[in-house]
Amino acid sequence: MNISKNKVVTIDYSLHNETGELLDSSEGGEPLVYLHGNENIIPGLEKFLEGKTTGDSISCTVPAAEAYGERDESLVFKVSKKDFGDNVEVAPGMQFEAHGEEGVQIVTVVGVNGDEVTIDANHPLAGENLHFDVKVVDVRDATEEEIEHCHVHMDGEDGCCDDDCDCADCEDGCSDGCCD
Ligand code: ZN
Image 1: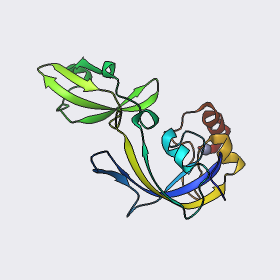
Image 2: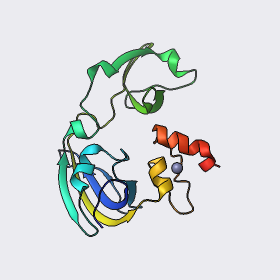
Image 3: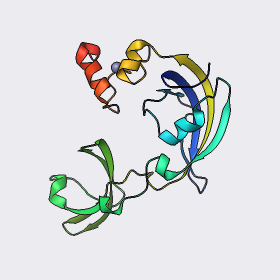
Image 4: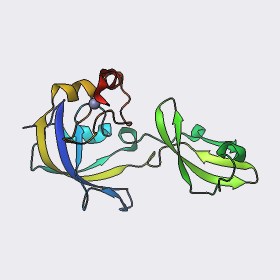
């Protein structure tokens, strides 16, 4: 079966940045299972996987614009240390989750100067061209429910109503009680 929209695809992968540093890998863990064509994974990687089939291996470089986007310097800004709450040690390199208009974002502390904290709300991989080595392990048809929710439901796991997926279809699906 070939990979196309609304197929459930299982891949083993490793991800390196341009300098060859390993950023992420499924080796030694679970392979990645996603619903193709539903923005479950970065768009640039979906393009390379389109039409591939079980057993295929690909090596590809996804440009930043089709991965986590280019860096946006307007997302680097100063906040007050008080915003972090009392008893929180704020230090450069610290990462935390912020809930914004576009869902959960990872924000990195890049500098601390007295009460002034400089934070960077760019995705940690923004501006990076990413190199993927991928092996297609399995391709199957999605169930109607998976297509409706735009994500994969794993057997016996709460793959449903995944926090990462906030598309309208998914929210509608979840209001049907799939989260119970
Ligand atoms: Zn669901």
